[in-house]
Image (cartoon, one colour):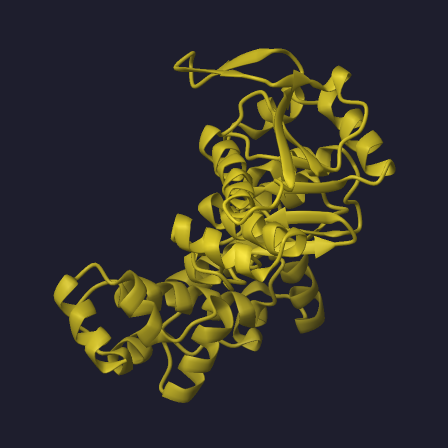
Amino acid sequence: MKHVSILLLENVNLAGLENARQGLIEANRFLTERGFDPYFKVQIVGLKPQIKINGGLYLIRADTIISEVSKTDIVIIPPVQPDLNRAIQSNQKFFSWIRMQRKMGADVVSLCLGAFILAGSGIIDNKDCVTHWKFGEVFQSLFPKVNLLSDKILTANDGIYTGGGAFSSVNLILYLIEKSIGRECSVYCSKIFQVDLGRNSQSPYIIFKGQRKHADHLVHEAQLFIESQYTEKITVDVLCDKLGLSRRTFERRFKKATANSPLEYLQRVRVEAAKTRLEEAGMTIGEIAYVVGYSDMKAFREIFKRFTGISPIEYRAKFCRSVQAVEEISARI
């Protein structure tokens, strides 16, 4: 039996904690109903016996405290709530315990914004990590040594596992169940919780907002120009002339400030504009491509799929706010 310690973090996201706990309990139920012993011994482990969250609305009791857990097999770090500086500060006493358990061979798992606590412990410097796409820029500013993969659902690296945003972290729990018990059990649990297996990207859910948290005023000017003129033919040379910079200097500064090349930034702005229109009824996909700056439909489809992971028609079917339009699309695909 594997001992699992789910951390009762200060400022914890209760839904994320409970999703992990229920997933592992369901895996145990799958085994016991077939005459096998449970695989996971699941405990909620805190700094103190209980905490209150959400302004005292919920009181959560720990099964035990970390000083009483000398060794565990799996550490699960659930999400914290979005007051991230407060969450990191109030949970620092977990950091040394996480490092100690990792040194003794424990697998360490972070879910969604739990990545901020994992990174705070220092054990994923120079390693891959995912978190909720919305907080990727904040994460990179706080933990520049960590290799953040913004579009992935999960990462697995030599016993350290990280899961993406919100309820997509359930995919990581299913992955751990499959790794520990087998495919049949993970499929069963996916059916119980009605979660799609096999998702590997957060890309369809990402809302691109230009990276503004930098101090390069010329890059800010370039960003504003791109975002206001994205339907026009914009080239790097046009931007360089406008800003009075050499191409090499401009591209270097733009990449450093935004983590995108100028062309990638323009493509992301256009794709985001296309997504907004695809969520509405009325315009055809060809019309949308033209309106956001593409006369070549093949190029539009390829660029759209590169940044979202799905085709424009699949995106419309998934996110269109018009029920009638969705029904018409579903009948065609």
